[in-house]
Length: 65
Length: 435
Ligand SMILES: Cc1cc2nc3c(=O)[nH]c(=O)nc-3n(C[C@H](O)[C@H](O)[C@H](O)COP(=O)(O)OP(=O)(O)OC[C@H]3O[C@@H](n4cnc5c(N)ncnc54)[C@H](O)[C@@H]3O)c2cc1C
Ligand code: SF4
Ligand code: SF4
Image (tube, rainbow over all chains, first blue to last red; front, side):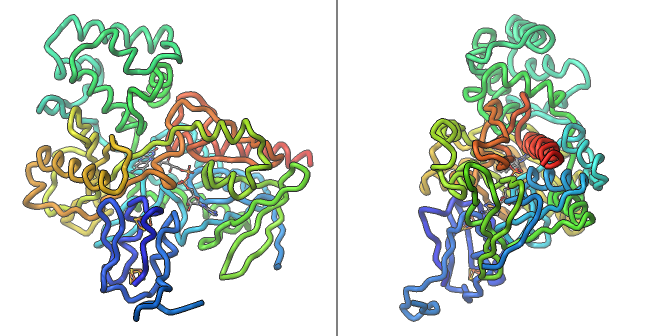
């Protein structure tokens, strides 16, 4: 699942329409649910860089580094 | 590192950057526009959602003025369809703005006090036709000399917020009247049948026709300068970094980012402080889809609601924006809180409460598509009306453009951003000619 960097997200909703899985909702701030397929499409569309690939492991995300 | 040479590098494809790019391309200069996002236009763009062409900001570009003139000058198509007569919701009554005597009609809906109406109408005429009030008082302070009814103050608050994204306690009285003069009473605006992105796309065609290029997914990560003069920028493209050398750099990525990209130390203290004093405009946009029309007219300016100040039924003007039988509306609101995450949710709730009360069919037939909040690093505008900033920066040949760098009095939002881009481009053209 991609991660929303909470301090950065302004809640503009621009990422919502982009997600092919409909995995992003935004009501004041973006939230990503478990339908996320990690296609990473949304990352490029956030104007403030608030969406990040989740590198923390825990079974999800591609571990890099 | 790979290198590339252009005459003009534009950072950001907002309407200001695209106006500058189209002007300079038309003048014969080699232009490259780099945009961080996958789509051009910034706040003047379009995202498809549920088959609807949703706006990323701009609801209705103004007709006439510097934007349309630039389109004519460079031979770009200006596909904007004129919108109908404004309606106001005041004390539960819908008032259609008459062709003449509009202010009196609106005030009569707001108050029964004839003396108050007369006082405001006269003061208004003096300010418009004789001498504007001083810069030193806010519009609210000015109004309080003549108005005492809350609805009257609310009426002006709606006018300011719905058309200039500013509060009457934020804008100076002089700024308000200058804005009003420029915009001829908020009548002349329209909607793009293909979505707001049509405007930057149309300018992109001009740039490409003159062999310029537009790169999306290509953020500038440094603006380079030597001895106080700009030399280009480092751009990230396709996972690689590239040095773009340019004689002129025009930055459309906002005040804070421009300073960060070029290095604060290169601007000098006063300039960075002046940018820090700019008050940004914040807004909320609620995007609505409905099976039935929610308004009987194109748009409604809402007076005295909790948060919502305007509702635009964009498909009434341009049905092409949604599939047949579907209506697309955008409600605009001015947030009052500082918008931390909890407050943001409360603000949206207040907007929805307003919409349920104002639009009878909202609850039964409408669906909220998106709730967009514009603040922080992605504000509705980097500067509210009336805060003039020049486009020339302390770094030679580095210009800053966009809605934070408007130098023309009375200009704001998209028209102001366009004006800033055109002014920078004209200045750059004279400098390039003599270089
Ligand atoms: C909800 C809402 C409704 C509005 N309605 C109207 C309206 O009806 N009429 C009107 O006149 N105005 C309206 N406005 C205001 C208007 O949208 C803006 O004032 C105008 O579009 C701003 O244009 P700009 O050129 O300043 O830049 P922006 O649109 O902010 O564009 C800046 C661009 O720079 C890019 N960028 C940032 N960093 C980099 C980087 N490092 N490298 C490359 N690119 C970068 C961004 O991705 C963006 O595309 C509205 C705004 C909002 C939010
Ligand atoms: S990574 Fe892909 S699937 Fe996951 S939220 Fe982003 S766009 Fe949706
Ligand atoms: S695009 Fe970015 S800032 Fe906007 S809601 Fe999505 S994550 Fe938040």
